[in-house]
Image 1 (tube, rainbow, N blue to C red):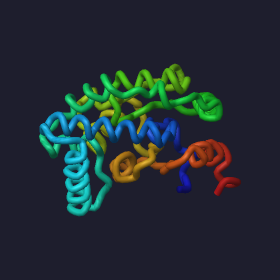
Image 2 (image 1 turned 180 degrees about the vertical axis):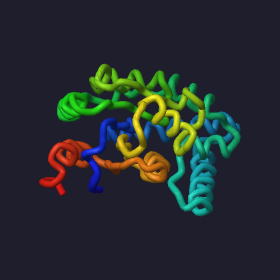
Image 3 (image 1 turned 30 degrees about the vertical axis):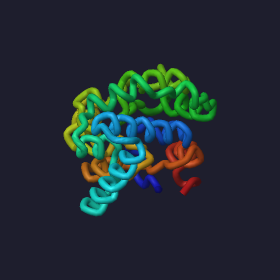
Image 4 (image 1 turned 90 degrees about the vertical axis):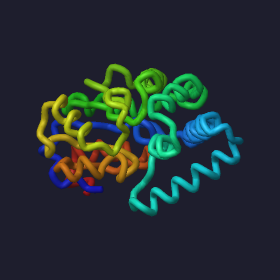
Length: 218
């Protein structure tokens, strides 16, 4: 996705999971934990929970025409965002899967010299802190916005307005970077923010050239 007005950008808001790192094994553990949460909530087997969640996921996707989130599916089935993330914080083990990538750290260090960097994630603050420590990203951003702030997951227009307000920049000056357009980027784009879809580390690392050398990169 090209950034035609990158000269106006003064701040960058990154999603975390699937954006600043990509790890299929940890993503699978998150999915398994959500299944275990619903199985416990409903008093059913994990196999039954998988079938139930898959049905709801497809139904809601067809009705809305957009990508669904784990928290959205779990709350539809009677769970709570708080309960789900408490279960995640107690059971997920990012330390077992994630490793530092010096390329990402170096890119963020260079971007931080020119732009104000922030993270806005559907993850909770406990896990976000642990993940950022593992990846060596703590200290590279000016602020972090997590689902604990309002217990309303992305996409949420009110939270995007809050992020923009705390960043202190106009929409056209704030680039949003995420791996799911419907979840991370659609609302910011509708509000006038430039957006960048990144679904691999190669795409993420390309962002630096797009911002510093737009004419060459495009």
